[in-house]
Structure formats: structure tokens, C-alpha cells
Length: 216
Image 1 (cartoon, rainbow, N blue to C red):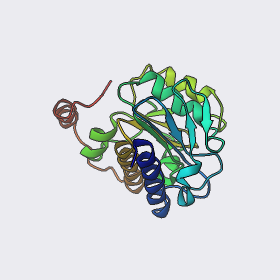
Image 2: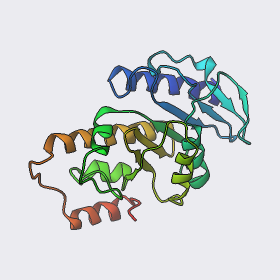
Image 3: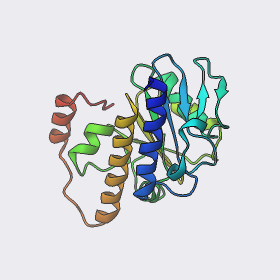
Image 4: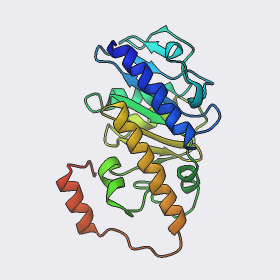
């Protein structure tokens, strides 16, 4: 099986796993993955993660031109911005409308520079700090501009009242990271107002040092 065929299958398999577990619904969410020659495979607009067809994924050449498949997601500005600003660290981007992440994004008292409280080691290890960005209309190119404004310093962001976006070295890592984001947001919602014990600054620093986490 060629690299392209394998990535097509992986996108559809992982998307269905996210859909089947309720991490996205309807036709929401989008995924992109970069091939070794610079081409990009992207989930089409209006498609359901539960029923993706590998042959119909949108295909872009290395110059960003659509060369095959269905019309791509309108959230392309999000994806392109991560590939542009984190070129050596981004092999895939996943964007969901997952319930607990969105719920946390619209509550008061959330730190916009680091929206997830340090409840577990794993959110820190897999995500670093998650930047909370303001609301944008879906498909607004300004979303990409907001990510470019971070100058490549964050691998994960949360669009207020919309959903999380995570970039990683490959598709599997991006999926695992966005799952961790949603689970941590769920924990934050479950423990909100209950005065939970958070990781200390020293414990966070130890994780950052040991696992080479981006933390600035």
C-alpha cells in the first residue's frame, strides 16, 4: 500500500473512532495530514466523520492548490496556519467540536493563556499550554491569522464557543492529543467549584523538563 493510500485509510479510521465515541457529531470536525512530498489530505466540507470515503478526501499539492477529491472543509485557514508556523512539528491537524471543551471555553474565570487547569500530568505532556482564542465565525480566515499571531508557540488552541484545534507530528499523535484535551476539559467541568488539588508549579516544571514540553 502506498503512503497516500495508507494515510487516506488512517484518516477515515481515526475519524470514525472519534465519531463513534461521541467526540464529534453530525458533519462537524475536520482532519488534515501532510504526506512526505508536501501534499495535504483533508476531510471534505459537510462530511461526517462516521462515513468518510478514503477516495473522496480533498487532496492539495505542495503549493496549496486543490488537485483532487471533494471540496475541502471551510476551516482550511486553521490547518494552513499550523503547517506554516510549525512546519517541522506539524504532520497533521485535528479540529473537533467536542462537548466539554466547548463548554469550558464559554465559562467565566478561564485563563485565556492556558485554559486547562493542571489536573493531570498527561494534558501537560501531550498539549503544553492550550491558548483560548476568541470566537470567530466558522470559516473566517481571521482564525488562521490568530494562530499565526502565536508565532508557532502553541500546538493546541481552543476556539471559544467552537472547538479545539490540535497539531502534532503525525495523525496518531494529533488524535491522541485532542482526546486528552477533551478528557481534561471534562475533568475540569466535573471538578469546577470543588476546589480540586492541582499539580504544583514544581511538578509542572518537572514534567516540562523531563518530557521536553513547550511551555511558554
